[in-house]
Length: 110
Image 1: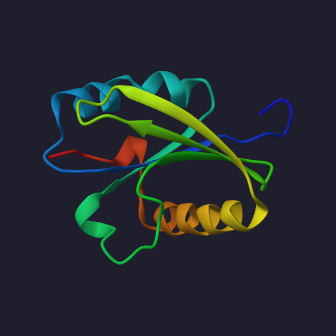
Image 2: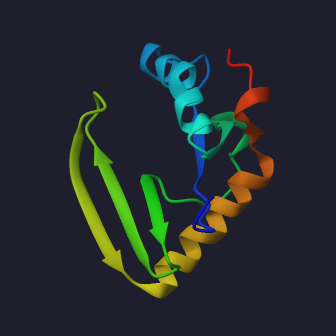
Image 3: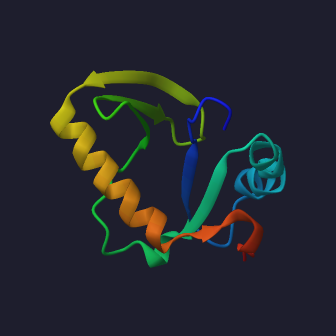
């Protein structure tokens, strides 16, 4: 992008998609239009990958933001962890998902 920053998002999803995730998929075009690179990975194809069990973002290779959601999908807590070792593990997990995931424009959900 203009500042040389890239934003990549990988979504590990259960199929068939829930109504909410189906809505997310439909509206991801706005993220893509804004320059974000989004990929999708069905959960059944991630069974051998070591990744955090919660939603997360990694910033500058040191700061991790974990999102903790309730069973109904409501955001309960944002947790920031400044730990380079944990961030490296999260990045490694993300990269393993990214390599296997399907680009948004090619992903056809069940």
